[in-house]
Image (cartoon, rainbow over all chains, first blue to last red; front, side, top):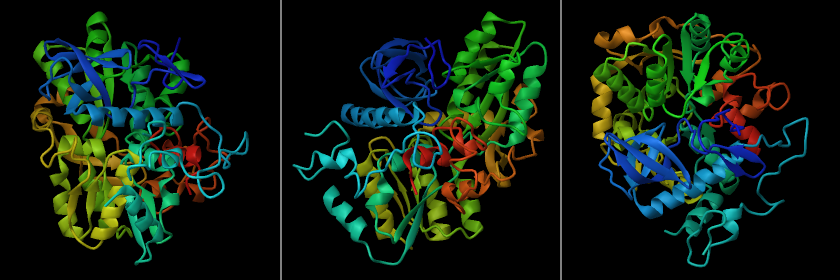
Length: 141
Length: 346
């Protein structure tokens, strides 16, 4: 099975909506993952079941560290809560970019209307206001 | 200050009109995704800047990659994002269909096992990106040098943020503050924006990618407008000094150089090039001066500089769509046009 976003067939891929994507290829977005094994200058980092080998020469990491990985390189060690938050955001963005969704700008297809007065607020505004702090979509409460 | 108060403040803001620019493709995507502009008063405008690496890479760079790929024994190694970006006539994706050897990898460091497996071929990595990616290229060069690998080369088009921000402001862009890029700042540190803030008397706020973080950053920018202050609203991962180990490895192999930006021409000291002693690894990056549009009507250049919005392009959404991109900004998920198109950002 090939990744539909980047034609990558070498990394494990997973289903997102109607598309199969690898979920780890981003040019400029550092993704959070968990170090599961150390191999000299490299670490094996797990991303929700996908593992990659990442260069670990720029940060002090150990097994269990939550890390930001960019293009196969660990750039920062982050806290568990920060990692989960970033993961949720990037998952949303991944769904945004992987299928080519038609918008009302397009001549073809059905219009995808933005959030606003007509369609109500964005999902993250619909939930999680109990404590005065908003949460990202699907993670309220 | 709670996020609800911030939201109310931004929606009801009636002060002087202000315009802020985000210079990170991932911020552009997140702002569109979460409908941030719809949560702001009409007095607050957001613009996308030159933050998408493949969008700012000139056409001659793609042309050179294709030329190199056509030479027998060469293999072009690249990130997936670059595949569909057009040079003056073709993209890597198109020429791959014509038999040119192109390998896509997750990391530049994946080039090493490829090169070791096939020592008869020369593997040329398409090294584009900003400060976030440069340390990975430095790690690749370090591996090449330490292990004496002779069949890996680089074609570089590495850019740096401060110089292009400086160029925008020197050209009198009507920008009252910048949402500073999140992960570029992980490497550089937030201090890199301090000279710019002071010189142009505008605020810089580093921000994460969550909607709350973006709203807080915009709130801070509104409050700090007119003042040369840098504020770090992403302290969980960004420090003032950045990742020193990464900076040191970059300094070992690269030095500051002039760079050509798509649609903006040459900007002095806005790129990183291999140092002289490692120039033998370069495949002619310094000769790439030309930048031609595939479609003359494309206004990617003006979009990148924040002078026009994607919707003002005559091709946007008709001749130019993610399936049939005419300009680089519609190709990458980090491109302004792609983001505006996908999420109907106005």
